[in-house]
Length: 241
Image: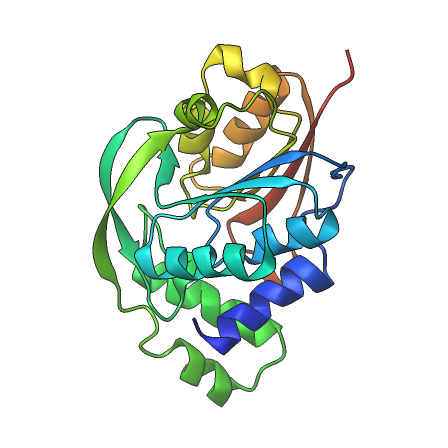
């Protein structure tokens, strides 16, 4: 949808391979849930990493979802692209959608904080101050968009899934709600989790403790470009019985 955002996604996902770290791996025939799929860059990475995986992708905003569908079709991705948010309950919700910075869209948007975060990230990436201001200025005007909300367990039932070999979550401060939408009987179906976690009010400890309590070994790291921010990556692999 815009070149700069796509280039940053490509760098993180394809060049840095941000989702395949700390023991996270894909095997032939695996099933992936891509929660917060945006235009499908992570979906395409999983597909190209293992062309025989099945990806169930979820994106609530209409414009990125349209691009997601186009990428599924254009690259022959096996799976589904659903326009909905995953949360701890079903119904409808209102997301704040940033047309020029779509990856920051979500239920808990904070335009001032997100502008400061983007400015800090771009500056640390080595861009000139004038270029940073050009990229940030006016980019956090948002639209309020109604979207359907479902739970992870509902999607497991609806898709007939018996195992989620990788659950990828990037939902801008709603990551705990995604996990809380998983019924107790469905936790054993999850084999690996990789998630962006916003450490607000102790959310990182809560998130990792929830995973550890369900039998996962968890590693946490922070991108050097995001040092000093609330954003971390969590990598969880189910312990062998």
